Structure formats: C-alpha cells, structure tokens
Length: 99
Image (tube, rainbow, N blue to C red; front, side, top):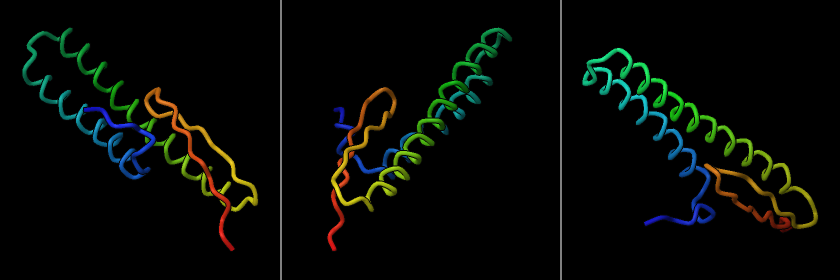
C-alpha cells in the first residue's frame, strides 16, 4: 500500500504535496457547510488549513532539494544529499556527470 518515497520522482512528490493542500482546502469548505456550530467550524478550518500549509511547505522543501541536487551534479566526485519529505528522509545519490 505504501510506496518507498525514495523511489518516487520529484514531480510526483510535488504533485502529492499540492494535492494534499488542495484536498484540505476542499474538505474545509465542505465542513463549513456541514458543521452547524461556530466553534466546530473554527476548529476544523484551522486544522485543515494547517494541513494545507504543511503540504505546501513540503512542496517547497522538495523544490529546494531538487535545486541542491542540480547544483551538486556539476561536481567531479559523487555525493549524497539528504532531504526530508513529511518526516521521511530521502537520500539522493548524485552521480559524477559523464564527459
């Protein structure tokens, strides 16, 4: 059921984070219509917006990790870069570019 996050490409990770953000906003809007108490609406909105912001920030972390890998790819020795996505550490081995 769960995939190894290290086996997923960067665009898929960015899409997953964006989907989480969008899904949280949609669920928040639906709950605002369904929940009748003001306190319930406020609590559910805050929680779901926090999830949406978390997903968006993870998307930004993946983008910065991709930029770091691209910057390291011009080096002459192989290196390994670690990134974190939703608490999962992802190691990216940057090979030496072939000339």
